[in-house]
Length: 221
Image 1 (tube, rainbow, N blue to C red):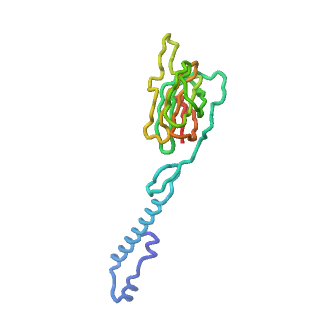
Image 2: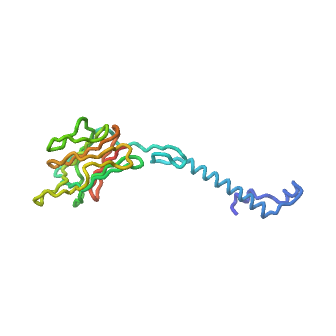
Image 3: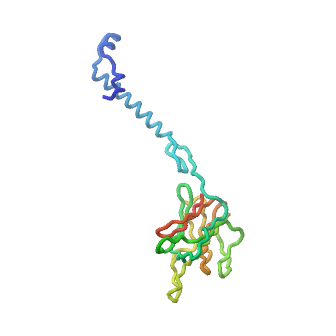
């Protein structure tokens, strides 16, 4: 029996004298311990129910709405200039909504060694035009972040005929996204691959470069 239970153990002789009869010691101790156990369980559950969580958005188990920490800005960003940056071939584009952000991932074919893709990303006003041809490109949303990757291609030309390295759709509408309406291919021309991210409104965004395989990640918060 724990020490706290011994401290609250009743004295059968005192109770018998006080109320004129005796209680069975084993039954009374069991009731006291059972009541104390229930009280401790209630207090523990109450504390767990009301304890705050961090890094989450949306209702928690206790019904408290929590917000995620903001990261990024709405100003243009670009990679640091590097001489002899390796050419990257785009292989996949995907987008989805997450707990605290909407994410777009531009994935490239694996490279030998460490090689980060170059990029420039920022909000752009006015109608977009396909690079090279100049045809207008419609992007859904009230604000558009243009992401240009360089040097990069989505078609391999070394085999004597064009061989696409990216075979996915030109327009992606991510499921479960709160901010992103559409991710749209704008063009591929002279070592630049350009995509546009259409948003419901202007929001802060951040760009991260990941490895194995090389990826360019755009988070909209």
